[in-house]
Amino acid sequence: MSGADFRYVEQLVVALVLTSVTVVIHGLGMKWVRDRFKRYSSLATARQRPGSLPVMIGVVAIMVVTHTAEVVVWAVFYAVRGLVPHWVSAVYFSIASYTTLGESGITLPVHWQGLGGFEAMAAMLMFGWSTAVLAAVSLKIHSLDT
Image (cartoon, rainbow, N blue to C red; front, side, top):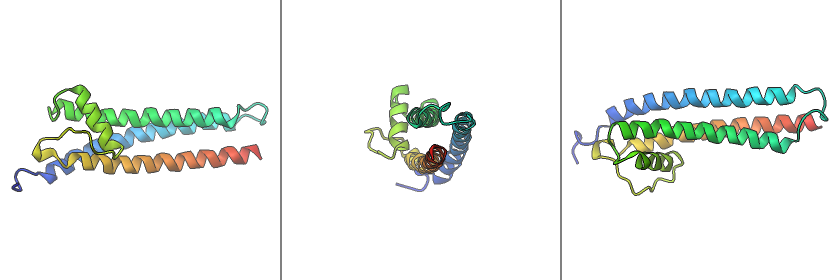
């Protein structure tokens, strides 16, 4: 494999653009979580607030929707550039890369083969961000209950 076949610079530039879009989407999703939680925590008494389980389910649901939107961004790139045979393959490859499962059975063209790794790198950061927000919400819920 020659250097011309494996264009990390082009992949890095594309990955930076896609990661930037991913960060914007994730920021909006985490703002959605924060806004919903503010409404919950602003209720004056514990009697007025719903139980913590529905709140946590709602937070996780928002996070799943957010991560799914991010997978779709990467899948759109794969499909539009014709790197995979069809839309379903693009989504499957993207979700396998995003979740770091890795083995989708789909191989990108040689000069794009590193892109799945860049997607996994971005996703690890997004999962870390979600985990931090989930932990913060959980701690705040427990502090409200005491």
